[in-house]
Length: 296
Figure 1 (tube, one colour):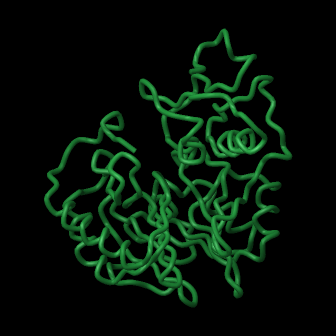
Figure 2 (cartoon, rainbow, N blue to C red; figure 1 turned 180 degrees about the vertical axis):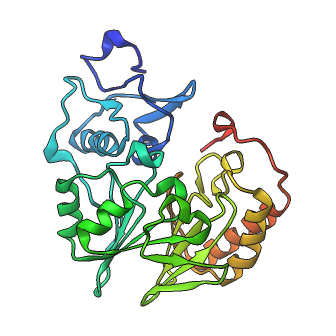
Figure 3 (cartoon, rainbow, N blue to C red; figure 1 turned 60 degrees about the vertical axis):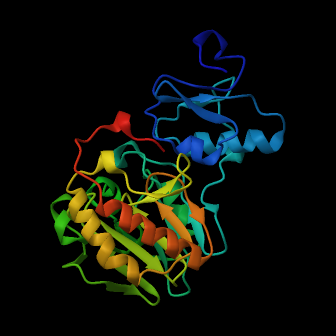
């Protein structure tokens, strides 16, 4: 296990800036694990494919804490935007200003949609735009608003947020109100889901993709869909009510969260697990926010 400064220049390592956000472990779970509340390199890459995985983890890490032996990442091995399937790309380049949240690009014939945002640079904006014009930047909640206006202006796109979190993005172009689903584009719906924050929403496209923000995610610990009980800023009771109202309306295969693992399952299996999540969440009591208590 490579965690000590004495070995930094001999092997891949994770430096002391790691915030335990889990992003690198999502991308390279066989190579990067968790120890004492931070990520560590479990073993060194054995071939080019594993070296590429570590570069993918490094280019997603919001603190750039995943470091190669000579401290220099190979730009040719920056895989982002990285295709998850034929329509969805993981943006990578997670930002400190969005609490290291994952961001996605959904390609559509009428124009692509960015869900939450990676760190901003002109080079990255050009990469995402090379996949097609971006018409909308969809924010899931207040924690992920950084860079939203800048990307929207760069793309000439509309910026979306729910009224419950409007104070975090008061210059949004489209404000979702209330708790009923709202159409965003053909086949794309915004479902208000107060709970994690007052203005949390999720976006569902084509009954296939669910961009859940921080409302729920796939847990490697439980092997199931879970809510971040210990990182619920507004109200776990409100989240339970939101899930009870919304889950019967949802159908999707891909779970694509802002934090936590992604997962693809048959739609019927995902629906069964979502019903279970709604039932479990209804029984949860409020607890203080405690990042250390959360288990990915």
